[in-house]
Length: 136
Image (cartoon, rainbow, N blue to C red):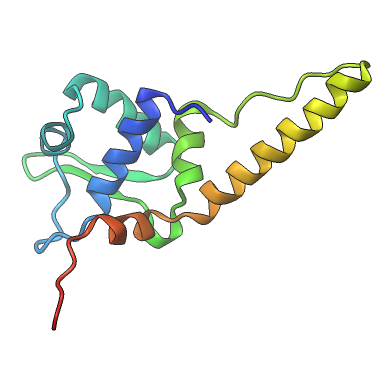
């Protein structure tokens, strides 16, 4: 599985928006860009794509920024990747028996990848990145 840099940046941006904030204010582009080492101009394009896919909302003005359009538990990693890179390549057609057998294996692998991505929520990933407090 290949993940483009743009898709990786989109995932980092979504995770930044999913982190709980005490004031529930929108997150500014500069904050996301600086904390994740993403070029700000490139991040603007990514956030516009995510907005077009209905994954984020923007608020204009001095107190503006971005928020998730739905709760993090209702957004899958697969949705984010599809919003940025599209649904993926269609399988190649062939009449050659060996090529058809291989194509079936590749399709099985793609289906397994898609299942994992679609079952992985942004909330779950946020929980994995949150520092844990150990009580003994």
